[in-house]
Image 1 (cartoon, rainbow, N blue to C red):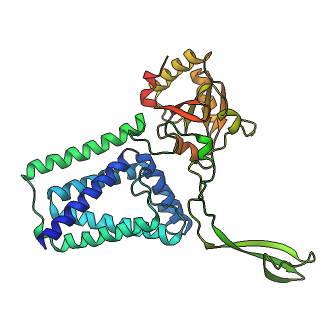
Image 2 (image 1 turned 45 degrees about the horizontal axis):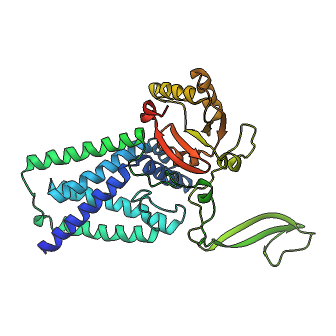
Image 3 (image 1 turned 90 degrees about the vertical axis):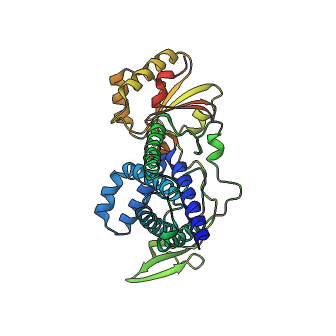
Length: 372
């Protein structure tokens, strides 16, 4: 039993550390996933007001959750405060299992993001993993006596604190300088236009449709292949998912660039042969002034060389900000806010492009070192 408990201890601890570190390089990714859950729960009528409140603090919860995951993993492997650690482990696994079961059985969220964007798992794989870890957590709780510290308590405490501090540092650094490992579809070398296309092996969802018509006060439901004549008035259409497809969402979705007057210019912008720059701005509140002054210097130096497009979801606010800062640019384009969240893990994020291919990316923390 002692050997089994220690295998479970080190396996679970290592998996928690790995999972936390993978997410620590992109804490905004987990924050956006948390917002998906909060919005889905609110839409289902589950504590809508608290869920909306939690949605506003998703990034803070993301940082805390990632740090806690790494700390629990390190503490478990080192044997630090074993009772507290195992109880925290069990509580986390109950939470994770509830969330992954919701993903699997509701179908309202495509993935839980347990390993971030770097290692995508299907809902079935994630749920199976969490059931296994929940069982191992229960084993550890009932066999605490076999868990012993690997070294002196003071040294273990110092290691746990260092692990927590490093995890927090990595997260804040990633939001300033971009993730050290880029697992997103907008990473350098990727062809944006190609990734907007449906995957070749996509299997579409299958739906059954019902059409509701009325006539002389009578309301009836018809199948698609048995619709009534024109004397009936259409009321509504309902669809029911019969069979869920797979791999049927492009890696880059809802990426449609438009001008201020609503003209769609995605192909014309991304198919130009020369190099150009794209600055993605999610919002203007809290922009780092020193970084934006450095960016202004870059934009002025570059104004006669390569085009600079500013890509936003809130054009009025960004236009006013750029006018106030007197930052030159070629054209301002609008893009879906969700697409900007994926493209810009730092606010703002600068891309160097050649045609539809991403050449290089900079977070705002690197604006002082932009090329001449």
